[in-house]
Amino acid sequence: MRLLFVHQNFPGQYLHLVRRLVADRSNDIVFLSAPNTNTIRGVRKVVYDLNRGRRDDIHPIARDLEFAGHRADRVAEAALKIKKLGFEPDIIIGHHGWGELLNLCDVWPKAPLLGYFEFYYRAQGQDTNFDPEFPAVEGALPAVRAMNTINHLALALNQHGQTPTRFQRETYPDWAREQIGLQPEGADLDLCRPDPLARRTPLRIGDFEILPNDRLVTYVARNLEPYRGFHVMMRALPALLARPDVKIVMVGGDAVSYGPSLAGGTWRAHFERELAGRYDASRVLFPGQVPYESFLRLLQRSDVHVYLTYPFVASWSLREALACGCAIVGADVPSVAEFISPGCNGVLTPPLRSDALSDAILTLIEDRKRNRELRAGARAFAERHLDMATHLTSHIQRIHNIIQKN
Image (tube, rainbow, N blue to C red; front, side, top):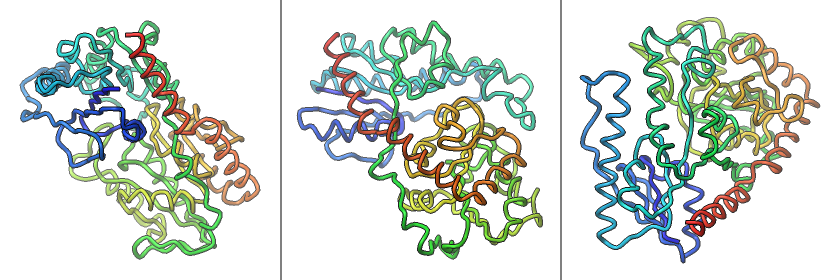
């Protein structure tokens, strides 16, 4: 197969799929991306030039569209150069989020397109105005609705779509779902797996030491921000650390991935000031973003793992925590409830209540039998539903089917 992948941050969600495809030497893979340093052996990476930022003189509801149109132009220009060199893709596969795919049907009119639909924004009932502590700023709702402009343009291409979870598919209107198939992503069950020996030896992260008798609570997010329940976790610290054998590691950067930034500082610094003097800070580690191997070691050692979020796309780390056999306490929102069945493979708590969160964590620390049962349930769920190898096989079969029907 001749495959053209498109994602502004190569390889994005396609890392594992591309690795599987490139292992078959009969496949010819070209990947279009904005500049970055990532590479995959056997993949021809082509970079498009953006050379233009967002303009401040554009109405807020049109800013995403203006930038998407600019990006679509640059991608199409790069695609034309590829075409002139003789590359004719059997299929185009890419993420619709940034407008990159919008003009490729003009470059290769006969090539089918399989686009990734990640999320359909709504002014009410999902993430926007979910948390009364951080309401949308006045006048923001039209801009939230306008964020679906690229979604609508992508759907108007009348091509093929995919999304990884039922929650994400159901955010789209009924009329749009016909185009969007469910394509789970899973986790690497060979890499993400329980390690029975992880609790038998000390674990050091810099100067922070976790001893075998310590009760380790872990929390992971790309960035430490309210969208991922960081404020809820922080406010649970005094109750959790009242137990003297508890240590807490909170992995994540200080930037903002979702939601508003905080003027004059980071969310971590803000909540550290709010809670200053109310907990033993020497037993809490903020290591920032850590290497993947360190992330897995933390999951394997964790006594209780916390996954919090607004009603928004669930992170890969939730699936990886299940695969590692973590005892998980998660936010009771649809995107998490799709993976966690209370009492079987985890615990769900009200997403904005720190008291309920700390109670659930402490209960699992104390009840070792229940903790072991949930760990076993998490791994069993992963083996039944999250096997990445199986999902990659079905994904590749769908690609073959689309090409054959075209």
